[in-house]
Length: 309
Image (tube, rainbow, N blue to C red; front, top):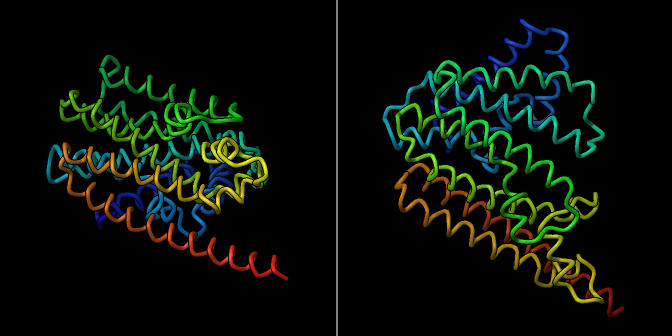
């Protein structure tokens, strides 16, 4: 999904962040660098963004530019990747602190100054202060903050709230995409690509709800899937009973519906890279679904045997 050029751009963006931190804030650099590495789960922070199940925030502007111009402007894409990764770290650090993640040191919070400066400042190279880009930037950036705050306040989530609040947590990914549209004087495509990000947000959040349901239940983290579990299960059932009996299958059907909408959406965009991505993600999702369903079947058999003893 990430070709050699884009992989190199992402790796260089991480190196650029580390170098900028070391030069401007060496004390901060060591601690923030460890946090970035911890997120990836490997020795290289870029692995986090290159993971096949990661939200395609760095692919989206690449896909958009490929639709408008080939070959891509690699310097422009490098700046977009650098900005987007900084923006992601900014949002992620805030989210982790809000979620009460015990592993996150609150002393990292001053690093938000660095991440926001680097995320925001890149765009001044391409758009003057009066450019229409900044109006959209402001709306999207504040919508991202608004949805994060709203989402944190919800205890029960219905379908409308899922679409307009929970799935909007990734809406900041629109910013580098609309930057591509404006860079090529195609403001008419801003809404189209923004709608694509919204659909991807629904798909991404639904898959997270599905495969993280037990962790969310254990840590009492509200989700649309768990809210539906409480609404749909019988009075004598536990949430786990409902998930095994029909809930997981119900959630998968909804996720497939979002995928169908994405594929239908791409019939208008005619973006071959997006088509490959969606096909591959469909296969990955199907494989994960099959693994979980097999686990449920094995669990049901075991419980049946134990129950008969």
